[in-house]
Length: 325
Length: 311
Image 1 (cartoon, rainbow over the protein chains, first blue to last red):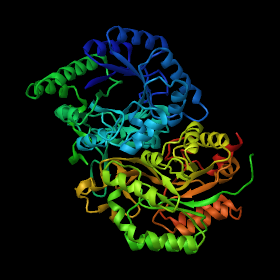
Image 2 (cartoon, rainbow over the protein chains, first blue to last red):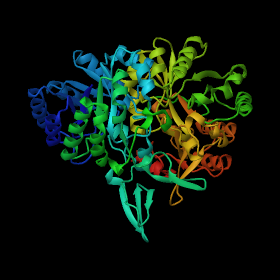
Image 3 (cartoon, each protein chain N blue to C red):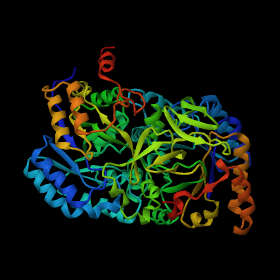
Image 4 (spheres, rainbow over the protein chains, first blue to last red):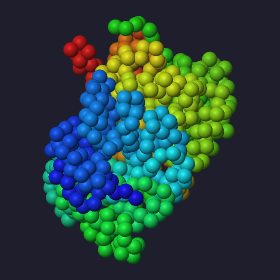
């Protein structure tokens, strides 16, 4: 299985290449990708240099253009696709049908990957994307079990890539406007979820309150470490109870399922984390690379190191395990 | 100003789990009394619920059609299981009625046949609408998240296609493999005991500071606020919108439809309509923020609307 690694900056990109990535994915510094955070992402010259650095070492570069084109501003996305192709991207990762049609029509030889944001979760959906746009690979939404994936790979004429490590969307990706409902900034159109521009922390006695837009996302007592108010990882009140209504502040880790995923016919494992620093990227990439070739018994030590780096230091197999539902 | 046509009223599928008789009687009354021209129905949120309404679909469709309503059948929003795939395939193959596609599997299976696109499919621009129209879509209900300037641009680019706007009801904001509704009651999706049926209008989720925020509806998360586009209907008509969608809540939807009809016909001003709507759906918080390119939960009052419209 290939290891697909995140890069939010050119230096993280080089770290990922040096640490053993088979491919690195990244995006331009604008709304055309789903990690449109201040200080992240690539200018055109930076992408050009990075692609060159990777290619010399036999590593591929995937460019994520995985938001949905805002009506009236489509040119921003079309130009990003034109430039990514011209700069030599090995694959474009796309979510919007209109943009897929543009790329399939104008660059029929360009490798097209379906982003997780497109939410292609079953055979008929994937066949549609293969037939309509010539998709070569689909990144599966994090709503399937390992058994679902094994069944799926046998039914489709398309490679499958799955998320293996890092941040975890609780909702089907690309189909969530919770953050937009609270902030007016849309994950799908603006490439930001729970954006820092709308985050506030305020003290209420000895309680630290984290807010997103006008809404309280969590309240932390004096003995608790406060965390970032990602909307779906907040604590809320339902009836007389309160707690993490959607998901605890955990991150995804499917290292324990590596063999099952390989057997299920998965072509590539993807690491989330374009917003993370280069040290994190280097550590996670090299540990996962080792884990991929290690005997199952040798993996636990590598895994322990990885888990220590996870958000909240707690991890889940997410939807890959049926019991998560 | 493109044209002065009056949009048709359309009733979207019931997103909640209502028991069979309640669901049937709701549609019987819609058939007999509601001034809507289009009705889209069928379980959309969770395949586990299908057996509640399936025994009643035939009689409901018959009653609606006898009353002159045009009926469309909705497909599931999220398809992961073989059983769910089969259901969508069978529905598309066997249905004598138009189908509303709500996920990508339906889009693929239905190519070449006339169909509708539901608000849960991501149509953010004219290029995407064009792809779907070329494959047989003849009506597209745009996602509730779209602002008016996107709606206008998309509709203007495809003047021959019918577009629909989500103008009343709690907004579907997210869907998950995990059932937060079941979890909140100590259950899981696989052993849910259909607990979401206890809240026919959604289970309120408040912040820890007791702010109303969202409601849970099985695997779907919806806005607590109810979208109300009444002051916006004139602009939507002028933009060329063909249908105005009312999404069923557990309130008197016949009265809701009558209010929207009266505003569309120019028989009631939107200020009075909003006041009446508050009586019909007591306790509901209204929102129209997405339309005005604000946070979705926002309510932009009419005075400000008029100012924005003129500015």
